[in-house]
Length: 114
Image (cartoon, rainbow, N blue to C red; front, side, top):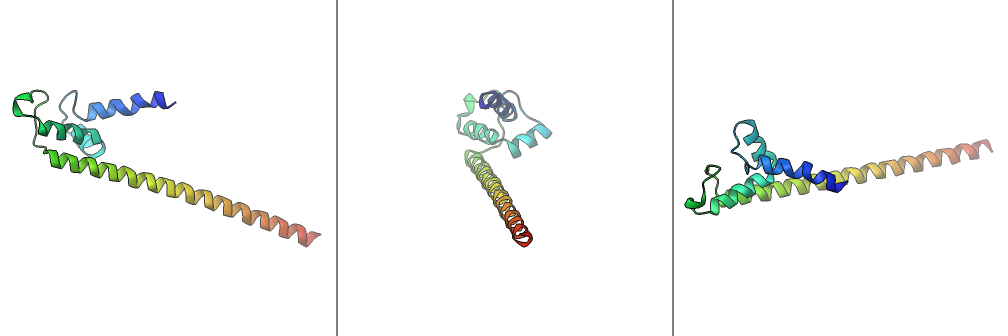
């Protein structure tokens, strides 16, 4: 299953990074906010000599600014992962507490009847 999901994740990363064609409008905004490879690609482009930059046209991204955005994306994904794991753990604990209270209630009812 993971093998079938890889193209679904990688193709938008490549397209929205601006590797295939320059981005404009909403696609540029989406690439800048949601795609880490956008900043990695433009950070690498910022380190190339001017004579090597032909297509797509260069823009004003710096290597340090792009590195900062890659780090910020990494932190954002790490925080999101921690939150999801915390919520999952909280839900499991809540489920276990509810089951134990339900079992305690059943045993209390059985004792009061018997």
